[in-house]
Length: 196
Ligand SMILES: Nc1ncnc2c1ncn2[C@@H]1O[C@H](COP(=O)(O)OP(=O)(O)O)[C@@H](O)[C@H]1O
Ligand SMILES: [Mg+2]
Image (cartoon, rainbow, N blue to C red):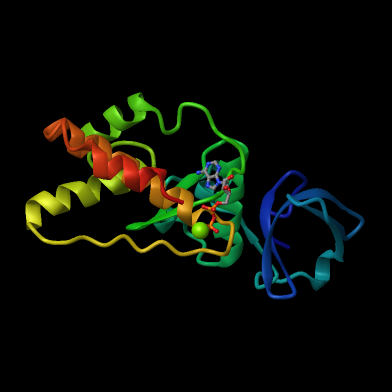
């Protein structure tokens, strides 16, 4: 069978139509044992495995990427795996092309939204800095000035996924930017930011 089925290899194992990120725990006596990143163990006879069932994991998926458009694998498993991998490194934002995906950390991650972050993302263009809601906010703010037209940010997700928090973060960034250009116009912005 294929060379990649070696102990320690990182592979995708298709179980019930879902691609699971796995490490091969052992290959011996014609039997392969897979352990998924989520703790499940699957045992198969080597001769029953096909390329449709098992494929080697790309380097991008192994390392994690800032933009999932650059993943070689086009399946839900790779997207969930990338988000999970980054989440374990306290990186809650990831792009898919022009879309920003946010994973709710459910705890305050220090330093992510402070003044220094506003400063950093107000200066950098998209692609120059790690994915962040302030990068998207800055893109929106710039578009307002460049196009002289209303801008819309579409935020979707399940209940409790962080839509309201994300909205407030965008408003916080826009408020900070507008206060820079008009220091006295904070009354309305503060009212918006304090709303829930
Ligand atoms: N970026 C974030 N950082 C820290 N906690 C967050 C973040 N986004 C959401 N949360 C937490 O999750 C809770 C639910 O988020 P919320 O924005 O109210 O969800 P939604 O509006 O999608 O129902 C918040 O009260 C907050 O505790
Ligand atoms: Mg809400």
